[in-house]
Length: 94
Image 1 (tube, rainbow, N blue to C red):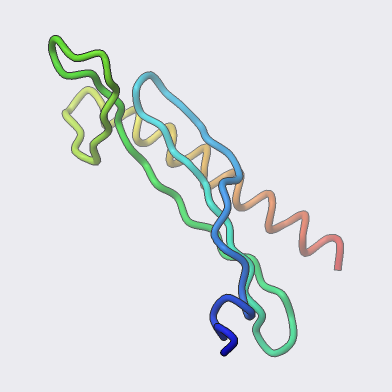
Image 2 (image 1 turned 120 degrees about the vertical axis):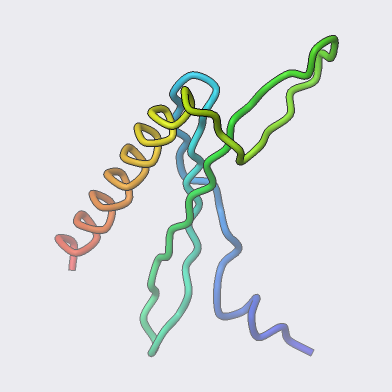
């Protein structure tokens, strides 16, 4: 049995990460075939990295304090700009 979802689209893959302090925005892309044309979709995951007191391991959260919000804005803007320019480049190639 062939997995129709797996055959019609690629798995989501990491494209780029932007950082502002401990806040990062990771861009992922996946390609899906629509009407026999490959279309790229982008998703962004924004997270804040932190270490718990007395712990050496990094954790992440999607909760932000007031001081983090400007960093979230910067990272989101960088991600949006990157995706927009990638899509513009794709349109120019057609």
